[in-house]
Length: 164
Image (cartoon, rainbow, N blue to C red; front, side):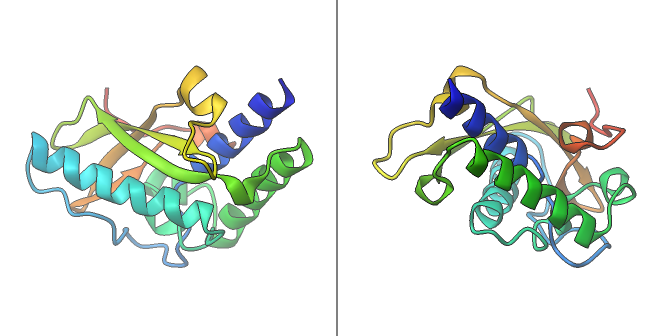
């Protein structure tokens, strides 16, 4: 049970999608059309965000935060938030170095919004327990032509900007 809780803490920290030092818009995937192209753009931005998080580049993920989320944190505060989440996971016994990004799934994708689920795998490629038993779909939106995460509440923020 401790492992599941710890993996959930990592998944929550991964939802902290937005750590680049720039407070302007993101440099993620540009959203130009709906359908498969929009889903591919969203998947690309989300993959970059989650991989940066797993690589410990928390400040670099800041660029993937929606404007409403960036209004709640500076890049440094965001990085500190993710660092605490990762430290909590480690304290609960999760070997963070063994987790890798597996499949990144999308659903409910339109020209302006969508949802992402990042599945984590261990060093053997087996799914991490929490990423399959308790999926955490996160909301993303398009701002200024770029896909950005908007699930601020998952990371201690006060608002969510995603369109439903």
